[in-house]
Image (cartoon, rainbow, N blue to C red; front, side):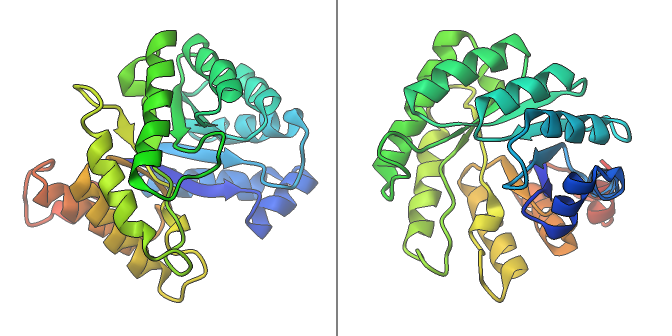
Length: 261
């Protein structure tokens, strides 16, 4: 399971203030903590705090001063992504493109140029589809564009879009079915990921909902997630699901072994 730590995000008050003050402390604290908790990538997102590409570059440089963990550059603005790629010395990921041609034609070549992984969110010109077919169609368009530009299949992460359970409960089963269908796009298939915290947005049982849905999605073929890697119960659920899916070897201390991987 590829785990992408979600916590270096301007949507969190502590990180927002750190960006404004150019205070490296909170950003580096979360970079080290998430790395220690098992994050394979650290998602770096300015949120709505600023639109200046130099601020994103500062965040990326701040992170890589203290960890060599791969960095997910998370911005809807192409000029911000370009600036961050230029300063990023760690392994890179671009988060994210959609199936909209303008974004595909800008971001897929950047991923190839910088040897970066790329998240493709299954939304298109009509926005985020609610049905399984729409999700799969948009994801397939992203997959096709990635192949046309020569992006390695194993650097592509398709995201069928997690919807808030509290407000769109009927969507959960559609997401699981879309995951199943995306696993047969190719052999080997692209990676499949989700923004897990969207599922439990504004609920009173965030951790429980996140970890149960994550295990169900892993059973359907999910092999990556943007999530709170500091949530021990979520991480224990991941470790146990990996064991049951025969992706890890059993030992009585498998939880400790997984945390130290």
